[in-house]
Each structure stands twice: as structure tokens, then as C-alpha cells.
Image (tube, rainbow, N blue to C red; front, side, top):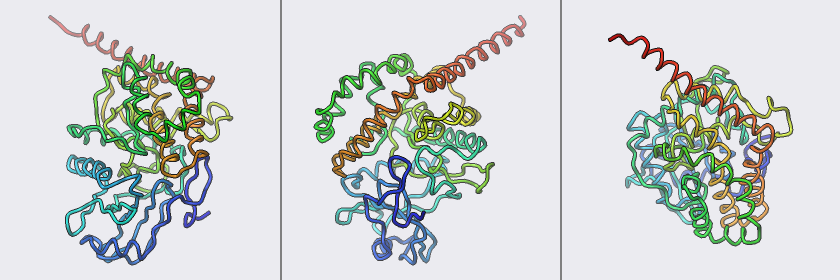
Length: 398
């Protein structure tokens, strides 16, 4: 299977792309306005990711990464939200690609129906370039390194105080379940997306949401106030890291693709990384040990805390967040399929299989077992801390 004409589908398959692949004449015309490129010599690789068209392109000044979006998905201001974050991260030690500017200093370029952006190639190898969604890490060592890289990214993001992103397709926000009373926020979210609202009007969506997702909010509500706002990546699956080598003990050396980023919190990013890397959503009929990669979850958390220890509230918020962390992106994805691609079939996959289906899985024996084990992990951290504090107190002399 080659990626020259196929992209990742919704159910672990390869499908025809929704957006035309980049061509050499197209990228050559674009790159001639960039001092860091000059012109396009050859397209080296075309990305199989489905929501845009992107390629690695050889130029006289080295290889660069070109990405093209339909303006209905990312307009100039939408890209600048991402570019400002990436520039801040680079200025504070974040290992992310450099966003390149054209001869006029612009980084987000409108042309016809499209919006383009250009990045330098980030350090590292893309060893997961063909991996489908929800592919686990190749090893626990890589999962641990990814946890460290995520914590380092969060440290670099501290102090970035840009407001929430505007309502856009394909952004993973945290607004609905961040509220003590989520229903008014959810109703507003849907109303702001009229095509999605029309689609849901044909379904018992309020009853489905109440039954399937809202019970989990009762567990999350108590911890939300302790989650500090932070701009986060929100899509840290294995293929959004670049690696030191193609081996089990590879280190994550760069983070790419900030298209889903928004102002959320560290726990949302951690829960998303668990949800997208450590649960085999396309093979849920197998044994627990084959569906849930507990050793990778442990490694992600261990790696994260090697760099940035979690508070007790953050640790307990992870199992509370996990059944809900996908929800706002699933809604955004459904709206994208409806309003941009005009596909009710794909929207139904996002609604039934993703928004409802992922939450419903956590009510199965396997899902409950995972949440119980994460809760036990969070509880044990508190006991260890209390025991350590007690021993320290007993060692104090008057």
C-alpha cells in the first residue's frame, strides 16, 4: 500500500483523499515567495493524514514541509492562532518546527480556496508516518519518552496567555465539561454550528448524551477547579512525535502538528495521549491485555512525572477525564464532515462510533477495569506522599 493516492480512513482503512494532493507546479509557485525555500525541486513525501494536504518538498535551500488547508477549515487567522503558539514554544525551549515567513513576513497565505503554511523540518525521524489512528507506541520506552516530551512541552507553554481559539472545525477544546453545569455550554456549542444542530435535531441526542456521557461529569466536576489553564497540543499520538532513531529505545525529540491545539489544561493533554495511544479502539473485541496497553499508560505517566510531577488533584482528574476527553473533538469532527464534506455517513461514524461509542466503552468491564486501575494509581500516589510526609515529620527534632 502506497500513500500516493490514499489517506487514513475512519475505521483503520485506506481511502481516497477528500482533498487533492499537492502537486509540484502548485508548491513551486508557492515556495518562490519564501526566502528559506526559493522553489520546489521535488515532492519527497505526501502525508496520508486526511484533513488537509501536506508534503515534504525538496528545495535548493533544503527540505521543507508544505501544508494546504481549505479556507473553510483553516483561514488565515485560524493558522495564525497555531503559529503564534509554536513561535512562543520555540522561544521557551519547545522542540517544535519553525514556522517560515514569506518575503512579506506572512506565515499564513491565502490563495483561491486555500490557505497555505510552510514549516522547517523538525529534528528527528517520522517512524510512524504510515501508522493509522489509535496505533500504540512500538515500545514502553517510546511511551515513557513521549511522556517526558509532553511534560517538557507543557513547561514551555507556561506563560502563554492567548485566549481560547474561536469556534473552528477540528479543534480539541475543553469548554463543555469544564463547566460545573455543562448543558448550557453544550447547547451553545451545538447552536453555534447550525449544520450540526440540524443533524442532531433528527436524533435523540440529548437523551443519548445524558445517558452516555453526563454520568462521567459527576466524577470530573470535583477536580475541574484544580486544573490550571494551559495551551496544549491535544493530539499527542505517536505519529505527532519525531524520534531519534527507528528503534524500540528511540527518544521523542520533536513535536509536530498543532492543528488541534487550544487553551485547555495538562490533564486533558495527558488523557488524550492515553486515549489515542494506549487503547485499541479498532479491535475492542480482544482480551483486556490486547485492547488496553497498561504498560504504556504507566510509562506515559512515569515519563511525564520525571519532568513535571502531577498534583494529587491532577492525578485523580486523569481517570475522571478519560471517558470525556474525546467528546468535543468528536463533535467538531462531526460538524466538519457535515458542513465541509457534506457527508452524513462520516458524521454518523463521528457521532455514533466516536462521541457516544468511546464513552460507552468505559461502561464495559474492560473500560471499568482501566478506570479502576487509574484511580488506584492516583490513590496510591496520595498514600505514598502522606507516608513520606509522616516519616519526614517523625525525623524532625526540636
